[in-house]
Length: 444
Image (cartoon, rainbow, N blue to C red):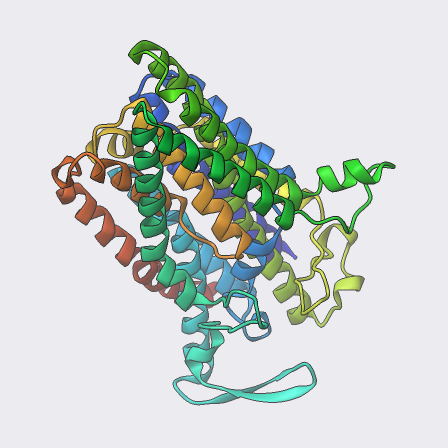
């Protein structure tokens, strides 16, 4: 139990570090455009990091918890993964490199699991009993590399997460580029951009109405209307609709505003876009630590020969299995969201400088486009249960905005350095975790 408690504490420490490591993602553009002071910006971002507790479910947490097969590993694997992730995060923060906290954690978890399999079985096959069946595995099968999932459901696994190292910034860049073009055309005194905007608003209302669910699982209010309105799934999609409609309303009046009026409006909209991105950051990144804690509890129960029901009430965690919903005690998400919000309050000014000025010069216009695109990308990937990097997403969004001016507006030298950091994060974290695992085997 002591080792489990140490892992939980260190996981929350990692969440805190994640907060100040990734604070720049949400606040860099608002600080660069002087919409808020640095102190105001971190308070703003931290508030919405914590508010994400009421918006997002546990889909990403489930994906992270299943990075390695919990029946095949022990607590030393998870401890080594978390320690490696903390070390790599602190190093990249010190160097001012906006690397991915998410991929650091995934890489550490996977690397320690592979080291565990090699330590116990070498490179030979081994058998495990899972669900009453005897299964033969290779040493590398200890990691969930690819799971096709059920029909109509997005596949998961480490390969999908690796693919989104490139897909997340690409989606962010594409979305911000399209939003920027939309805003630029809306500034023209022409009827066609307005017709497009109205059509988009109608399409958005129709799409959001289709995404809302009426049959909610938990009844927190006597009124069915309020139960539906405050269901986390519905809140997320209502937020998506609100963001798109808010930008649409601005686009309808953009051409009639003076330069000064448009600047004032854009700065106000930046508050909305940065809040939306902070929500996505909190919801996406806090869930990864929830997944690690859930995996640690399940591994502990397996190693002690206990059922989840026989565990203390505050440790009764279970992962979703088919149509059976998972269980997550309230203290876990509350602790994770609190830790990441506290970390955001601590700032992260070295990375703010890289994100807010070194990639491309950012104005309020670019800030709104980049943060809106980043937020929508995070909501979309969270819906697909994919743990993407908020760092990669917002970096891609800032690049997409820069491309609307000219290709040379993006400082590609800085961007290439960032991409190398992204590519190296998972393998370096995995190697670090493997090293820590072998050291921990001496003592545990």
